[in-house]
Each structure stands twice: as structure tokens, then as C-alpha cells.
Length: 316
Ligand SMILES: Nc1nc2c(ncn2[C@@H]2O[C@H](COP(=O)(O)OP(=O)(O)OP(=O)(O)O)[C@@H](O)[C@H]2O)c(=O)[nH]1
Ligand SMILES: [Mg+2]
Image: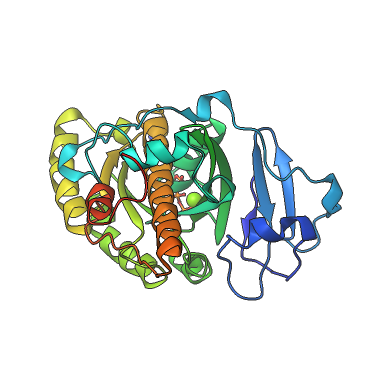
């Protein structure tokens, strides 16, 4: 079940949801008014008039599905355009997870926004991963919509909130109010439409206006791979890798129709977002210990490079 957001908002958060919602970067004056459970997933709706459950009836978090458990770091698609190419999670992250020193990471919900031209396949990509469905008919997203996905990474629960935004110009102003507070930005283009690749720079610029460019993880995703011949794909990939390198984004190519690379891609997003969260948490607790404030800088989005500049607060 998913819900269109951004139509009409009201400030009304059930008491139990306070801590949960505090990590939702919603525009001032808005709170999700309802959490519903649907199979393994939760969706939140802001639609006024939808029946509301009493807080006591709500299930706050769904259990993690067995096929959402990550024990190892999923690898990048192309080494030329990757956020990092290390084979394993950062040693400090592995160590912190083993010693149950991941702080609040297990309770947090990380926001991921998906942007790109209309009809490039953003909704289909999310639906393939979250619902394992594919709809060949185009239904434009109006405003924004989102899905929650729960993972377990190195034994720690971790949640991603995947925000599906509208690509149509007339809905852009609604959608852009939901860009704020993203930990990862997924910019989608159609591998068979070079204009959609060119437009990714503008989508990124718009999304970065609302976010801190030094801490957000970027992914450039080519969609509809099933529609390209191998020769066409090779040509497009060359251009896409160049754009990804300029953006300092990790490049992926997927097909929501066949499912190619969809799961691998979202697992990579979950793993890298988790890793960044744990590293930030370790920095924070280190800073607290010495009574100082530390700010995370990731100029080149390389989590390992960032971490190696800091004094270790965890083994080894
Ligand atoms: N062949 C093929 N078609 C796809 C794929 N992904 C999406 N489509 C089709 O492309 C059209 C648009 O897909 P959507 O996911 O709705 O596009 P969107 O980016 O969400 O569009 P907006 O919501 O308007 O921004 C639909 O007809 C889909 O069936 C794919 O991987 N392969
Ligand atoms: Mg859509």
C-alpha cells in the first residue's frame, strides 16, 4: 500500500510516534497522520480524512524480512564510478556492530529521495524492490509517495524511507519540499534517452539546494536496461560514467521489468547509508568524550577516506 503525499497536511502526530517522526524531515507544519501496516511494510499517509488508528493499535516497526539481511558489503557495479571500492565494511563499523556500539543507528530511519525526469521509471524501480511488481502502464506520480524498507545490517536493524518524487514539471514544486534531510539521493535517467541523462545535473542541483552536499550519498541510476541493445548500452554507459564521476555519484544500470540489478542496487544503498550512519555515530560519541564538536566532511563521498582522516575511536 502506498499513499500520495503533499496534498493536504495537518500537524498531528500520535504520541508513540514522537521519536520516530523526529527523524522525518517534513516541512514545517506537517506531520504524517497515520501509519498503516501492509504485509512487511509500513506506509505513512498525510491524507486528511483517512481513518486514524489509536496509537495503542499501531505496530511501529515491521520485523525484518529474511531476504533483507546483509552480512556482507554488497559490491559496486562499476569501479570507475563508485562511492568506494572496498570489499568489506569499514573495520570500525564492523567492530562497533560486534560490540553493540552503534548508538541510535538501529532506531533511525534514513531518508532516501529518488528524483529524475518524468517517466524514467522511478516508481517502477521502487515497486520492483519493495513489492516485486512491475506495471507496464504509466501512471504519473503526483507530488510524492514513499515506502519503508527494513533491513538488518551486520546484526543491526536499519530502516530506509524511500521517497518517490514526481518528475512532471507541474508537480515539481510539491515534490521539492520533500527533498530536505536526505541521506542519499538517487537520480534516475532512462538509458535509452540521452536527454534524461543530461537533465540529471539539474535534478541533482535542485536536490542539493535542500541538503548538505558534503554528507549526502549520491547514486546515478540508468533505468530500462532491458530496452537497450548491448551496443547501445555500451555507448550510453560511457556517457553515464562520465556524468557520475563529475557528480561524485555511484553509477548503476537496472531494469525494473526484468529485475536486473534492482535488489543489488538497493542493498548497496542500504549498506553505504548504514556505514555512513555508524561512522557518524562513532565520530559523535568520540567528540562527546573529548568534549568537542566534530563535523563529518566527505568531500569526495569516500567513506573510507573520510574515516581515515579521523582519530579512531573504535578498534582496530
Ligand atoms: N521496458 C521497461 N519499461 C519500464 C521500466 N521501468 C519503467 N518502465 C515503464 O516506463 C513508464 C514510466 O514508469 P514510471 O515508473 O511510472 O516513471 P516515473 O519516473 O515514476 O514517472 P513520474 O512519476 O511521472 O515522474 C511506465 O510505462 C513503465 O512501465 C523498465 O525497466 N523497463
Ligand atoms: Mg512515478
